Length: 116
Image (tube, rainbow, N blue to C red; front, side, top):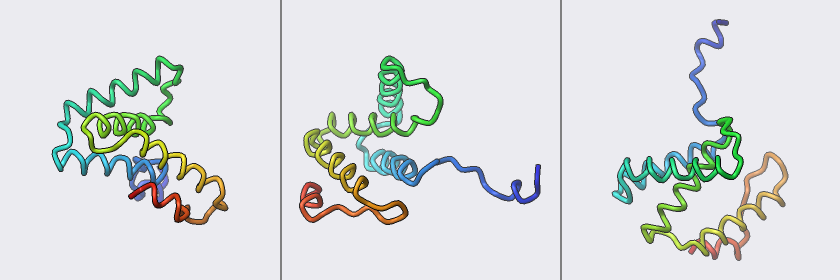
């Protein structure tokens, strides 16, 4: 192994949003929103749904399953409303579409109102 490669830590996340999803799960668990066995069951169910729908299980969609499981648990626990979550999802997608590469994605005032 090249010396310069040996000194770099491994990258557990491929994108910042993956780390944020991971952190959200940890924070909600620490606040008692769900137990680790409940999280494992929700994540396993999300992966199974994705595989049944044709996900090739190549590893690059793993944190999408985290988001699916997180959404399911937060809705089931009454921590979030499904319609509001989906409206925010679409708002972020629209904001990302109109944002030039390399710039921060920013919600418009009307989109930010959905988060309140």
